[in-house]
Length: 402
Image (cartoon, rainbow, N blue to C red; front, top):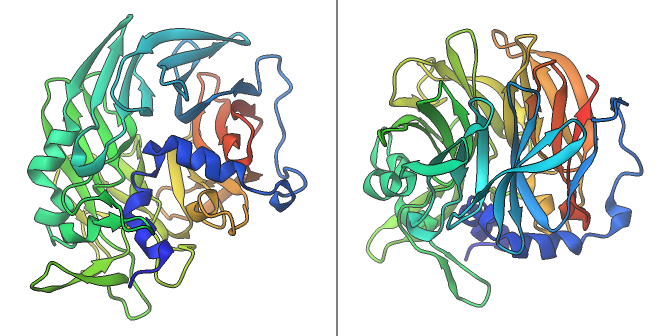
């Protein structure tokens, strides 16, 4: 019998689609569980530094535009979705969106232009890449269909994930997720206006897609290792005929493109049999050129290697104007603190790393309230999204003085 936390593992990768469940769970948090104050932050006092509140909505990503605006992918609890712009101290609507699922990743590719991804659903029924341009929107790549047709982490490379491991039931025995392909196109970044990279959380992959609808898997992530140097097991199951080992899933959440010819990928890490998945998240480094990389620690150095390890719940990556890689960790007690009331909030952080050595260069901020994303504007200012709705408040976007 799998524990409650173990059963949540495949579900977390579709967690952000269950917005009402998350919001209700978050509001059950006791305020006295929260740190008394935010430390290590110097909030910029400029009039347009925020914070900008987005009540009655959830936000997963932000992105700076060339003209200095900050794009915000807004998902209202009413069902309305839009791309909002923060500029000159005001919030305006760039474009309203009619999509089947929520906006997740967003990446500016010019003033009034952006890539954005939408959330997946059970058996990869949804989850697409869109391009918004000058008031018009079109779906450019059907990421869900790619997952249904290919399911790379199950069928390509080391084929480490058995589809049976995605089956999940509630405590009442109701089926939530079927055994089969699952996707969650999360954060997105752009090579240019025609090609994007997508971190697929439920697929444990990085996808490369073009505006012509061409899709391939850039990389497959593999499970974290246990003390014996083997893939960390989560539980055993069966398909009725054979015993199946299910592993702790890496859960790709973020991707950044450096000026050094490399791509960087952050992972969240699913639940573990021991409890909180702390210290298991990694940042991978791979060449920007090429596709079909397998990111694994089992076989020694390869084209895709771990740059940084020992992290917890990486939710975003961004290349800074100083050439450092800025890594956002969602919470020091892992993502589980946002969905399990008994686990207290520990605080999120932003840290800057050297892209050659993987060493810490600067501690930027700590004790953030569930930071979901960061972006640098054209002046080099650092903006952060904090998911304060998890503590019964609103999602906010504000500038940090780093």
